[in-house]
Each structure stands twice: as C-alpha cells, then as structure tokens.
Length: 208
Image (cartoon, rainbow, N blue to C red; front, side, top):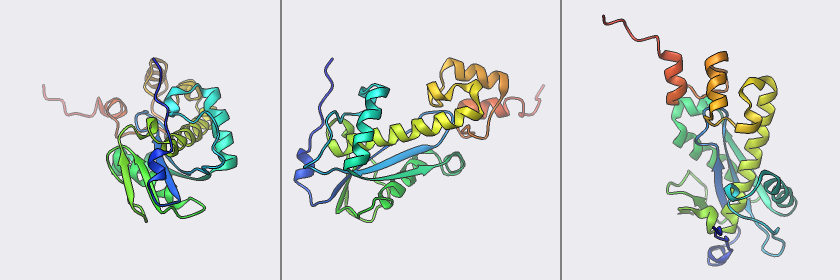
C-alpha cells in the first residue's frame, strides 16, 4: 500500500517561518519522550521526507542527516522522572514546548502533530496525522525518532539485557522477559501499568 506523500501546501498559506512539531516515544516502557521542531528551507528541502514510521532505519538516518544540514532544528526531551510525575501526555507536551524554545530562530507559526497544543510562544495549529500531510511535521517526526533511537542505543550499553538498541524500549517479548529476569531499571516508566504492576504486585495487603 502506498503511503501518503506530505507536502508544503499548508505551510504556504501561513506566516513564515513555520515550524513543524512532532514527538517520538510516547508508548515505550522505558526511556524519555523526545520532540523535535523543524523549520524547513523551502528552497533547499531534502528528498525523502515522510512520516518516520514509513521509513527504514537506514533511510531515516540519511534524511535526518540531510535535515541537520539544511533546516533549523530544535529538540526537546522529557525524562522518565517527568513522565512518571506529570503523566506521558503532559510530558510529551512539555518536550514539544522545549523543542520549539530550542529552535535557533523564533517561528511565526507552529504546526503540531495530533489534537492537543503544547504551550508555545506563537500561534499554533494541530493536525491529526500531520506527519503524513505536512512536510514540516514529517521532518520533525524523523528528527524526533532518530534522536530518541540514538539515546536508547546509548542507554542499551549500560543495560544490554533489555536489547533497547533494537526494541527502543517498547514492550516486546524480549524486553518483557528481561524485566522478569533482571528487574526494573532507573530508565523504566514506573507509572506505566506493566512496570507498575511488576513493582507492586506483591504489595497489596493479604485479605485472606
């Protein structure tokens, strides 16, 4: 099945510069959530920008490298402590706010993937499945994904049993088996049900 090709059509109707914002890592059991804000140069836009989920890891890396050379980019991170303290949705919005604040230039408008706007210092529009529609959001999805994947590979060096370099912290069988065998690490999201249940399964009072 052919994947939609994002375009610059919406950006052309807005004040410039326009930043696309997207995140990576809402669903995993471990690691941070990472957001990116990207302002593309319409005269120098790399080929191959798509929703990051539709690209191979190799191709994502190639497009990300081209984006770092041609676009204005800001990255924002919310760590496991924040995720557990304020919940994953609020942590995601916080990472998006940080990404926009870390742009080297201030955008006139932001286009945000999803339904909920983060707190920003400029007008913003939300766009459901924006990474399949807007080139700017698709570019942000690639930067967010490749940045988080790199972070998970680095964490995997200290905790190789969980194979985060391959599963990026998602709840795949090998990750679940490692949790059962080796326990919970400082990088696991204790507010997520599978981790919480593992930590507190034996803490309920004995009623019988």
